[in-house]
Amino acid sequence: MKIKYLALSILLASTGAQAATVSNTVYGKAQGQLSWQDGKDFQTQAQLVAIGNKGVYKTDDFKIIYEAEVQYSDNFAKRGLDDFELNTARIIFASKFGAAIVGHGYSGVYSDVYKRVDIHQSNNAELSSRNKMLWEQATYAKNILAYATPSLAVGKGKLKLVGSVITPKEDNGSNDDVISARLVYNSANFNAAIGYVQVDKKFPANKADDDYKRYSIGADYKFSSLTLASMVEVNEDSFNKSENTYVGAVKYQYSSVDFGVSYQHKTYQDTTDNADQSLLIASVNYNYDENLSFFVEGAFYGEEPALFKDTYSEDAINIGIKFKI
Image 1 (cartoon, rainbow, N blue to C red):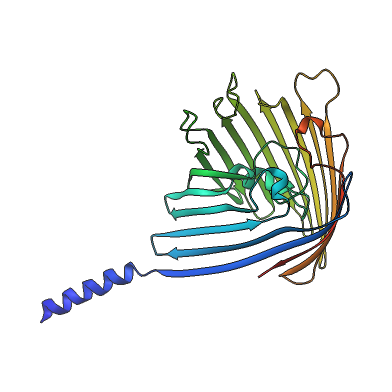
Image 2: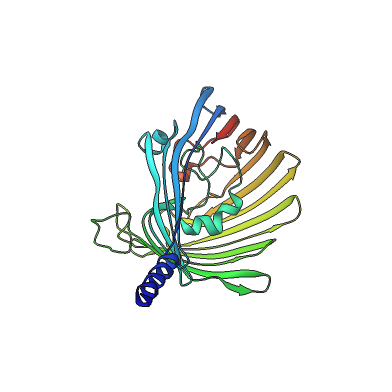
């Protein structure tokens, strides 16, 4: 009898140690706007409609996070995309030994280095934006395999190192189309990150002579209602002669209203004339509550984006609404 009780106790103890909690959330978001874009007729746009799912499976030893999101935008066709895009579909396995990420989703370098200066509702780096930002870093990546070290306490914040291999093409003779690494520091008021990206010379449609290397650094400091942010991108052997991009952003919150201003400046290599480009964006966003907001926003290019090789980046004024559930 005692042996039975002992066996039962061991079984219950082991079952308790493996007990897990599961949470799952389905969400939706939508953004519509009136747009006055230079050289084009007045338009009403469903800039973005998205539905997603996020879940967490958590035990005492580890947790698994899964995410998926499908997006629709009137602006996808302008970028040569389908009307519906699955931009996020990834799994994150996290434990005391760090975190591993596989699938599709936000580029880690964009999230940790660039996103701090990408502060506006309408004119931003999202694929649903009608205007393009000046930096070269992509917002989303496909076929990601990444690892993040455990965070290390440094001063008043935490430091971690992240590395990834991205293979969006499966038939170009390269198993590591894009490799990246970044060092990330986060604290209550000050955040900073350094990023490195190398794109294989076999990746572009017309193979290049050298691998393309991109270096970036970003930092922000938060006061009570004011956030100052900056980012610098340096390109080496780029496929389109891009050189450096410098970005500064200021965001101020007054009650339920957010004011944002950002400025971008870009240079090119080996050009015979002054091919610098600039972009100024200003926005006012009123948060009615946590689910509904209204915005007015303007984007103004200092130079015609001829070297941008796109047909949609133009000065614009946008008035819009954003809703999420």
